[in-house]
View 1: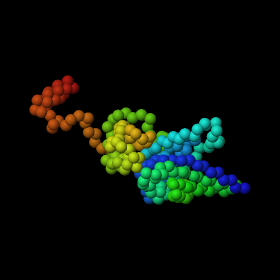
View 2: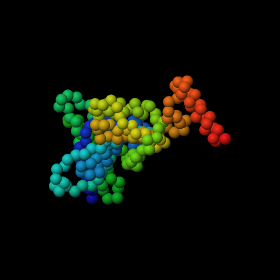
View 3: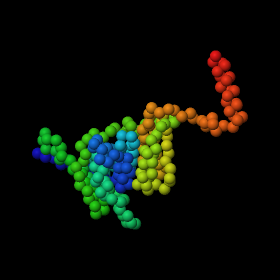
View 4: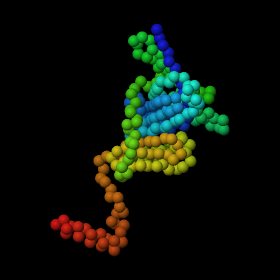
Length: 237
């Protein structure tokens, strides 16, 4: 006897689009060619995209009214193929829809593997798809709780991608908060949106001193530094 379970939630379109920009289209690792939607509670959902070097996570909260009136809830998640998110397009105009309804239907029949189908509905546009059957990285472990503030070697191409991410989110500021973390993952945040990202460092590069280069000093400053170095060498000898 088969059993069908249907899960439904709503998400901001900008969350899906921003997370998709952090992914890796057409990657042979199929989970990178999708957006992970993790519905952890009736009021809290995480929308995540990654390409292995950069990871973006949008935190969405929604009001469900009186929790006592809500039906029983079971956490669920799925990976949406990136192509179906792009196919939704970017609605324009004053009355353009901004919220997407996401549906996951799972049918089980005895000992056979469950069959899953997904659907994205944006206004009059509806995309049906088969969720990507793969294990998504544990994004909660990737995002560090704290950073050490040490300088990191960061690929500029990765930072440049946040221009498009910010545009997808509709942020007005033209900057991000970058918290460097040495050889660990650095944190990137927008001031006005509940999205956090991590950027992996480029390892194996020579460390740059955290001070102005000597060639920028005046003759007097060069003499003073030379005297300090000479004194330190004499003490160590």
